Image (cartoon, rainbow, N blue to C red; front, side, top):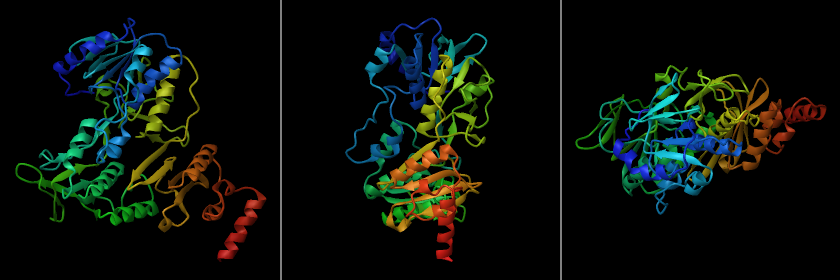
Length: 445
């Protein structure tokens, strides 16, 4: 991935790099020090790799946690630095060298080297691309005005935190996880928050209508205003952003504009090297790209789901860590852990939504419990089998559902709709359950 890191930034880290353990002649080079990149390095050592390991990080400082950037870090009184993934001592003790403030510019696959942004070349035994993703940019007029922000890095979060003060008019474009988490943080700081969403409900890409309605109402209770079907056409202002205009001509005053319209995989390094890419670097079940000496891991990858055979690119910590384990296992010639059902979470206004599995739009939707009570679940059936679940403030049911999804069990929809029946007892196919379902159906007829 190309980066704006310059030679001065690389020079500033020279002392730290020089103090790092001496590299073997051809180390495993990991480009990217997010969750997946760091986990690959740690996994290699855990699995007994005794060769060199080099982590290349386009940012300065220690690699850090990403989820708090749109949550805890924006709160008043929160530390300005998110928690680090590993302390400095870990890298030294494990013999993992780091090069911070530098990026990989290109790959010479024949020579097995990577050209770095400081002009040097680094040889590799195996190369791992863990470059993650970046915020999808706004392309409307005025998108470059001061006050228009995205949120992907620590610096992004700190600048946004500085701007969110009481009375600030905040326009958020996009009602996905990031947009809604920032909306919650801004509302808690007494900002005037308007969310502009092109679709007809919040989080439409990742959840169903009942969950969307619940979180829309939750935000409304905290003063957040939603405008659906809003196609942003421009951001207008003088020296900085002052308003956001949508297709029908309506203009919404804004001192701060956050673009939360999704992400793009940082696949350019791989694509320029001729590796297979399609909205993500294509990898197999072991994380291998189309070049057997090059792997990829984390948000930047696209792969075939081992559960339903669909092509997917997942943006979640769980997948980043699971893929890292598979890459480390394959490089060391060992067996990886069994695939885990993907899971995700978001926290908005203190309410936690946890999702297991990947929902499809045509899945059967069954609500368990009363959303008005603030604690409920939504299960998704595909061809009669439990495929995914959303749980709101219901950790126990999340854990149960995650296990049942992995088992591929068939669920009786009548039993599943009754929150008084544990989900584990809604498995269809046994006489007692069939009779119970018939009794419930008769009682409700």
